[in-house]
Length: 278
View 1 (cartoon, rainbow, N blue to C red):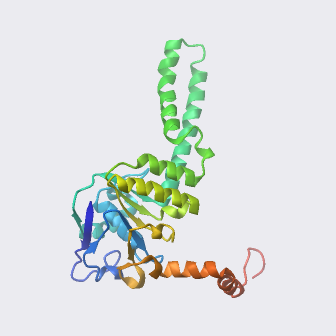
View 2 (view 1 turned 90 degrees about the vertical axis):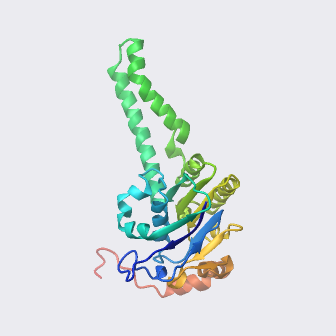
View 3 (view 1 turned 180 degrees about the horizontal axis):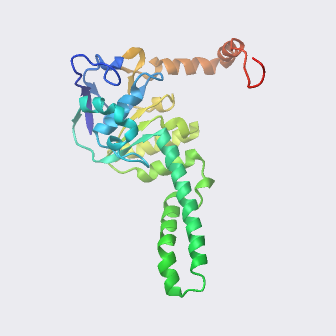
């Protein structure tokens, strides 16, 4: 399992990503053997660090190339090279997941399903009147591919919501003793589905798996026994759930939503619409 990490910065780090403020005094960061949660506002660097960790650990990504080979992460190579990982036991299984990867993968499965169905129709027309042997040769591989896709993702992927497909995909890809890095998995999930995700994670932890998750979800941040690393104020520190700025905001908002929203609503700028002459 991943035990800790630190970043060996050059003498004068400049630019992105080595110049990110939180890296200046990061030190050696210990992670939980079960669940570590990265919290903090947008732009604080938690997703950047998570992506670099995935690259360094050579984790595959859901539906795309391995994180290390992902062209969209090329700019993070300097941070990947500067990272130093310490393992108590090297985990070879697992994956890296970003919310956008899941949406892209879902669309890919839907396209594959539609394309296979169209190919089958064309092949059946082309082989009409042929012998049974010729039909088996021509249609067999296509039918086998369609059956395998349906067995894994359902007969009709469109019948599932994004959240349902995400949970199904997550469940299918879990393996014992795996390292799972996830960036904002709550993006596709309702609160009820987030609870289902927590349940699946609990089962995976019981089989020796480890999770590192960047999230804004107060529900996921409340996972029992998890280590929370807060990226607020341009530094990284261990924090409790109750001390997180986002949790305090959500608590106060839920206690008096009118007080918060009325202030925002009444002080908004006048809306401008195309063609209204403004």
